Image (cartoon, rainbow, N blue to C red; front, top):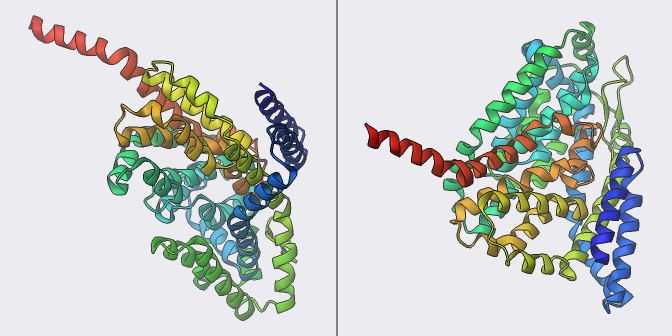
Length: 450
């Protein structure tokens, strides 16, 4: 009961922090202290808890490393002209009346090709958000379309680390499952396209300053060579090179281009990597961002989140819930609703997409014993993997919004893909449980009468 009350208090505290623009690290730290008191009551010593938290903090280092690399990537891409070049060519060739639809489609294609939502947001999302900013569009609307597209590939790309882990945990053959999950995603994707088409018509790029492309061309010496750092990330991801290596190589190429083509001072370049880049021209309001310091708060949240996750795992918090579920004979709809709810709760208190679907699978695995592996994997794919990004303080939402520099909760109504997937799956479950037999009987009667 105490654990349940602390979980409710934690979620309420985090919701309050998000709605009042208070740093999430405060709420998560208080939550960790409260759970630590529970650990002490369960005969865990302070030394045990510290050892657990140190171990979990070390586990957060790969995520923090990627995040810091992305912050350096942004500043070097801005400095060398890669992001300005993508903005320049996008403004030149895309249909301004379909810009928001373009944001969803191009990020969906990119995320499917490279298999990483964070890489997609960094490589493609930032130029698109800069275009939106320059034309006074609703940045949360554009951010929602970008993040929707980024998680399209996270769910169905054969290069996605989330999908690879899911297939491993559920004993599913990767490429046959990719085909199945892609087919089942056609209807939700079409629904997203319809919505973003409507949003595009209502929010066209009509207010873009015509001088923007000229300023970009003059200030950054725009040419196709500036696209090399972005192409490196995409091509190396297609070759299944780890994202850390592809970003590092891309950063090195961006530094070389910045020094050779943009004639940037080396010490200025180092300053940009630490403090972030700002253009020294009329572009300073929109061509800016990156830098290690801009990500320090996010890194702190990630460390605390990993400590919380380690606490839940170490004390086996959800064991009672697992035993409780075994008493019920759940139909497909109720089982999916429990999976959906549990995935959201674990994402909310563990702040990690990976932990959300790993713990959800481990807790509910026995309730899916009559499912084949593909169907079981689909249940988790259409719940915990995509819905984690709907939790504002979860890493799945926190990093993309930090990279795009948008609100970590105001984008949610516009991230249609993230909730249309579970809604469509729920409708399918309802059809199987309540309507399939009825339709079958009616169809059978008509044939017999004939």
